[in-house]
Length: 286
Image (cartoon, rainbow, N blue to C red; front, side, top):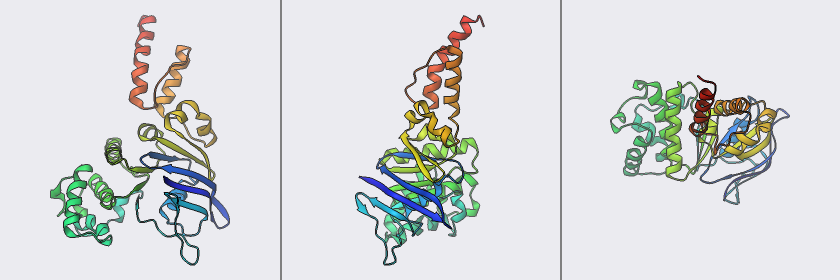
């Protein structure tokens, strides 16, 4: 069960943005999509949402082919949420409540259902109910970003696509936003597809990683396997390792042997490295 692309190709002006891509996105996973600019990441997630009507190949959701119209054009998939870069720029309502209610109203939700959903969603994105009457322009940049994301979560998407959702945020706000989204994903065993160029964020939050290069899917791996054992895939795509993994390799060179770690998460890597570092300093008489 999940989302499956079979031999999908997308061309712009005769040039393939995606070239014979086949993959399966399993439910309940946080899957990151990485690659250099122009690798096909944004085209890939637009195909998942159904935003590119003319696509060669097949797209199945839970083993059912996504329907097309009489002209063979794919339809937008309503159960998939999509958070673009700078999502706050897409807000247009006069109050936060109206912004949150817009999508659910289109889905046919009642006012009572919308109010209950808002009461549930706001704490999950770190906001309080007193913000509902505020106009979006009154909010801080971080609050606007959270409201924009909350408006997508209000529709309870089965799959949430995050296309560089932390663009323009400072490091503290970036971490806070990603932790919030990770909690939301884990709480409901939801599926997230996360496009990012921050390798440290990918290593920290992902269950799996898809690596794109020149329109092709060159790897789809467990996150720890990719960063610790298959760095050649990253090199092929012109990508660097997360900084904690780079530091791990440096320590291995200094230590003269391989250091075993259970995952590529920063905290777990440094928990293994600190005792070795302290022992090295004692040996050197520091």
